[in-house]
Length: 108
Image 1 (cartoon, rainbow, N blue to C red):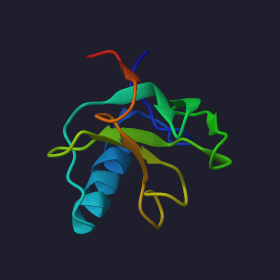
Image 2: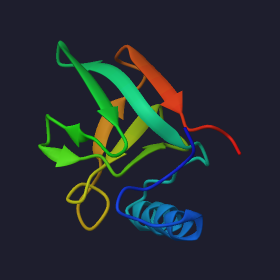
Image 3: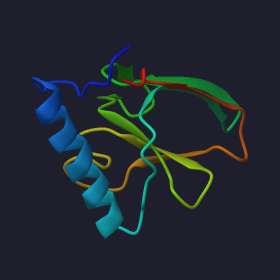
């Protein structure tokens, strides 16, 4: 699947949102890689979870807007409107302490 950002029209706008969110996270000391993640399956606190861009993440009761990989830690940043997009810290997924499987967007 080609990279996209929910509620954003066109590739240029999607790139702007992606760049802006990454800059917002850097301001919080959370640098990211260039990896574009579409979906992540993981276990946390004994529960199985699935998060996918454009779909509701039930644990937060919010739609997943972006999923980013941390640059210097084994973490995945799950970004929703209230967690990493407009305000607040992203939802943290510990990729080194849990079983984690990541699906990337297609490279184009």
